[in-house]
Length: 476
Image (cartoon, rainbow, N blue to C red; front, top):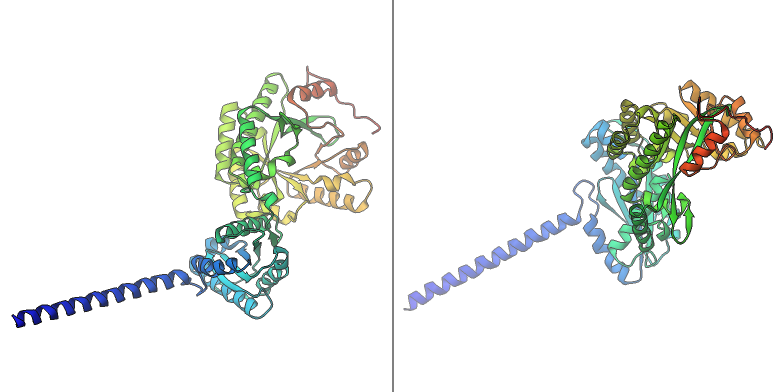
C-alpha cells in the first residue's frame, strides 16, 4: 500500500511540475508575442500598441502632445523601386527622426512607427498644439537635409505633420490619434508641411456631421440647385460654354454659396454622390438647351477627393443617361488635386482623355503648381486664377504673369481661360494678350437655367436663328 501511495504521489508531483513548466512556457510565449506587438520589426521603433501604452498614463497625468508624420510621395518609391527599397528608406527615416528628437533639435519625446510610412512623436505635456509647431518644423527640416537613398537612388524627402494636444484636442488615445490624423491630411492637402487640429474643419466633428446630414437631405428634397456661368470667346463675341456651379436653396437661410457648405462635403464620402448629382443635372440641362438649338460645352468642377477610378464611373453614367457627347464635357480640377497625388492625377486624367472628355486645371496660380507640373499631365485647358485677373490693368507685374502664362500654355498646346473678368478694361487687355476664353461678372454672374437662356437671347449668343451677335459695351 505504501508503494502504491508513493508511486501515486510521485506521479502527482511530476504532473504538477509539468503543468507549471507548461504555464511558464505559455507565459513566456505570450510575453514574447506581446513584446513583438510593441516593437516594429523593420525599424525597431515602438508600434501603435506601444504608443497607446506610453500615451495613456501621460493623459491621466494631465496631457501630452502628438505629432503625426506621413511621408510625401512614398508610394511612388515603392511603385518605382520596389518594396525592398521602400523598406530601406523607412529604416533611414526612422533613424533620422530618432536622431533629431534625441539631439535636442526636435520635440523632446519618443518616436513610434504606426505602419506604412506613418510615424508619430509623443511629447509629454500638458501643452498646446501651437507649442508643437516649431519642433514639428525641425522634424521636417531634419528630413529635408537628410542624405536618403533607395536602391542607390538619392532621394529628396518631404513630409506632412498633423498636431494635436491633450486635453484640448482629445482626452483619449483614440481621439488624439484621430484628430492628429485629420490635421495631418489637412497639411498634406494644402501642402502646408505642418497643420494643427481644427475642430471647425474636421469632417468628423459633431457640427460637420450634422451639416453633412442636412446636405444629404437637401439632395433628397431637391433643395440643391445648379447655376450656370457663361464662358465666352476672347473677343467676347461668342458663347463657348457654361460652368455648372452648385447652390443650396436653404429653406431658412436662403441661397447658400458653395463656400458655406462644400468644404466638409469635399472631405467626406458624400462628395462622390454630390459630384454625380451635379454632373447629371448639368448635362441634362445642357441636353435640353441643345434640343432648343443652343450648342455649347458644359464644365463641371471635381474635387481632389473624387479624382480616382470612381470618377470614371460617374462620368460614364452621366454621359450614358444624358446622351451627351464626351467632347463637350469639361471637368475642372484644382491645382490641389494635381499636387496631392501627381501620379494618380495623371492616370485619371489620361483615362478621361482617352474617353474623349476635356480636362481643365482650375485656379491656376492660386497654389504652387508650375507649368512644369502640367508638362506630363494630359489636360486641355488652363484657367488663370482670378487674383491675377482682378488687378490686371492696375498692377504691371500681374500683366507680366498673365502674359507669360498664356504664352507658355499655348506652347504646351493648352487653351487658356481667364476667370474673374469684371471690367471691360480687363476683358480688352486679356483679348490683346491672346487669352482664348473669358469668364466673369462683366459678362454674367452664375444664373439659374431659365435666366441663363434669357441672357443668351438678350446678348444674341445662341447661334443662327436664335440670337444676334453680342455687342460688348464700350464702357464699364
